[in-house]
Length: 380
Image (cartoon, helix red, strand yellow):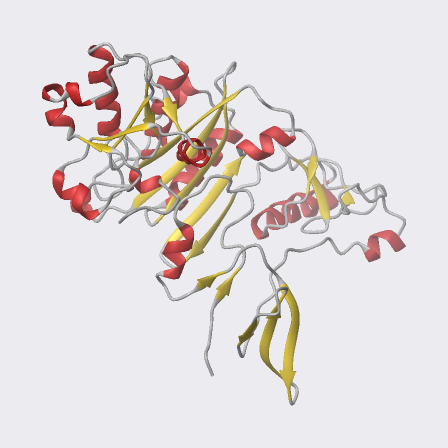
């Protein structure tokens, strides 16, 4: 019997930017299906033998795992006459007290406040349940003296040798809460020096343009994602702003971090963007231009060896950044033409932009994250 591994939703739904997740998972022997669902489970002699999809495709298997989320179990609370919120969870105050002053509640069954939006949310996470339980227990014994402030929806998961994590708001959740005065940037770089066994990190930071407060952070890769998310979570909960974050004193030694930590580098990049020093475009925006029939001038500034190993194959112009000043005549003659520059992680893409601006081009942009953060099909 042929066996399949299938994943419908490989990462938490609060990760709202893309990377090449499907290909990574496929490389591990797992088939990824999207835009479909399970129509029926098929069995013989009391045992599962196959799953039928909505399009009637049959997938033979011996085990099927259904992981579609959770709902608060509030039946006992309803029977006790406790107030239930619009999201279906038990309503509690900051002391974990329900609508009955003699009853406390904690864990997956309650609604809690989101620290950024101020709205009630469901956050069924084991760590939060334990923290809430401590607050409820202490207050039940000693009187209402300690509080649970709320959540920023910090989460992380592992898929093979990749991890994906998030803290705070995403662009999508910010839009849903009518928070639109934001700036974001994608940063791709290693978690530590290459000679120390570096892993790749691709992250996205979200900042309020006015206050410069960090509102959200997401990170994926095979590097130390957990450390980045933990640092971001503390920065977000501490309401840190960019001016503090860009000089944050974090632990550094080559086995653990770059001299400028990946998270701080993300803050540097978005600060440059806010100060007008950097014009960027996301991979999704580039893809949308191509899909809508546009032909943006893409300029790849990597070295020859890198180009032979990996390239987009979108008709990009290849000129190593070291040779660019001698080959400017190969670029668009119109100095107002849009030119999108990139390299492996777009550090040299930024250098390319500076060279072009120095020579009179006015509409040049860096593709955020470079080729390693390109989440779509490519030539190699």
